[in-house]
Amino acid sequence: MSSDYFVSKDVKLYIDYISEVKNLSINTSSSYNRDLQKLIKYLQLINITNYSDISDDVCSGWIGNLYSLDINPRSIQRHLSSGKGFFRFLKKNHRIDASPFELVKAPKTPSYLPEVLSPESVEQLLNFKPDGPLELRDLAIVELMYSSGLRVSETAGVDLDHFEEEMSFLRILGKGSKTRLVPLGRYAINAIKNWVYERSKYSGESGALFINLKGSRLTVRSIQLRLKRLATKQGLPPIHPHMLRHSFATHMLESSGDLRTIQELLGHSSLSTTQIYTKLDYQHLVKIYDKAHPRAKK
Image (cartoon, rainbow, N blue to C red; front, top):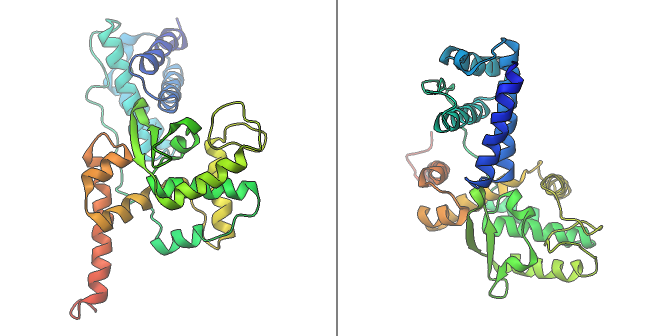
């Protein structure tokens, strides 16, 4: 019996479980599936054919193998999470007695601060007169993402009927299929209304807010490419969508200091995830101090 046979069928059951029962997003389920397919290939490589032969040394060997392939530590941590979750599932369903992943640890992830645009750079990005329907749509996309701190996947998933109270609020389906209500600023509302009027000229099969000129929902990849193109046109370095989300959170924190509200707006399940922005805010305060205090200058 090959490892491909005895693991693959259980991986399929596990992915179905996290998708349908745990209600994880399609993107998360797909990532876990890819991770576990790598585990299957590794087990084939070392001729493991039974669950009883998978020890903690084997699991550590897989993590070490990923590390040798120059996969970044953050991604390796997700691979480990995929393996741990899968073997917990096997134990819960009496396929194994104990998980060999229980004591396995991934390498520490370096602490990277998010890339953030300055308010001036955001103004430069958005300060243009749209030339044609595509730029009308692009302006609406960027205004929405910066106004409400949306993920790019959330932006692509917005439908016309997700708006409430004359576009003052938007219902967002976030990670883990959790719904949250976010407010929209007046610039975003205006840009979206202009795009919706233009959009009505194109026959879209779905109720998607952002479509291409053929009427199909805009993909995450398309949004990434359009944002990069817009940044270049506006004389800025390439910008990825998450920078707008980070900028939203950082600028909100600098103005309000209300971390709990920012957590709600971003859809973070844990406040500890949102606290990364306090480090950015601290850097901002240090810069102000260095400029303003007469004894701070070297």
